[in-house]
Image (cartoon, rainbow, N blue to C red):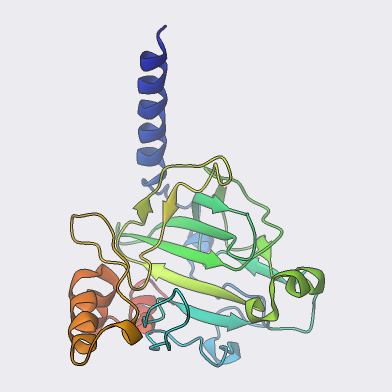
Length: 248
């Protein structure tokens, strides 16, 4: 077999794997289809126990930082529910299938596909996690932990600003990614804030402090129109509204 032929077969296999991952499997029982909190704080069906970080609210507009433009927070940042800095667990909110895994540092991430009772699909994202216990392709339940919060040693290494879990609910399929040597199981990504998705190569918006005058407002408006996540926000799809649609 020629080198070109081997590369072609490899690409076909990757495409088939991506396609298979995008098809969520039905949960095995009603218990797996019950939506719960991703953290173990008493009753996992009670949102009153959830505490968010100071800047962890959904759609909160952040201030620009070096290399990071003004953007809207695309999920929520949930605080550690207990003073356990050894193995505080993180759970899937419902039964589903793991379709993407990244474990290369403070931005370690899991993406899980869910099949809802009405036949619709949703995807959940868990980021800034550690000690991942599941693998790509694995069908999981909301009962057992899928990962944990970072421990003190990891927070000392990466920064205590990561002492939370970033959680998102997606109603659009996540973006397919080409696996790399460093992250061979990162098959999908979320819709990054400040990146334009409009059928053309993604482009980071210029930093606001480098845009003259009234152009800042125009760039923000364009970002909201072209980014699917921002378009949902414009139509009133607040995160809690989306959560209620999938059964919280």
